[in-house]
Image (cartoon, rainbow, N blue to C red; front, side, top):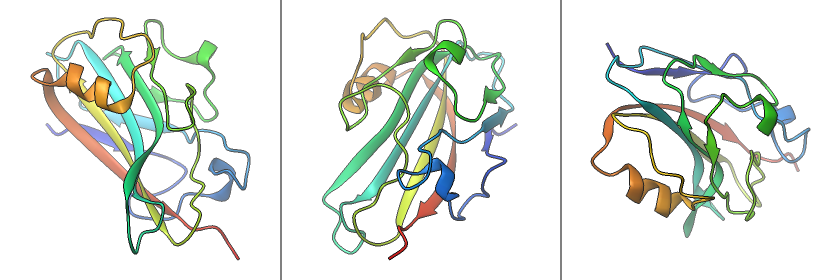
Length: 158
């Protein structure tokens, strides 16, 4: 069985509604997942944009959201999830705005792709405090059982 990641707000490969972006309410979209392996001990969610700052000449991957140690029994996250609503034990990393929590799409130019990546790990991660994406990915090495991906796009209207 393959790990599956979906959102009721947008289909894989389609546009992310404005309400979930910096030009809307900047709220996190609802996410659901299924087929988490029985051997999983924790989940990691990484949301990033590999097209920054310009899809025609990308120079970096912009990190929008980092969550780790999500319980494997969790089936998703509600829309506009707050820190208090995160499942017990969930930890947050720093996004590229140097804060925790969700930061929605806010591309300066062009249509960007936003990758929502869910990883099932065979262990819990140590408390990394508020890791960057690189620190989180380094801690995950050797512990990933499987992963799922959901891609949305967004372009600011002129």
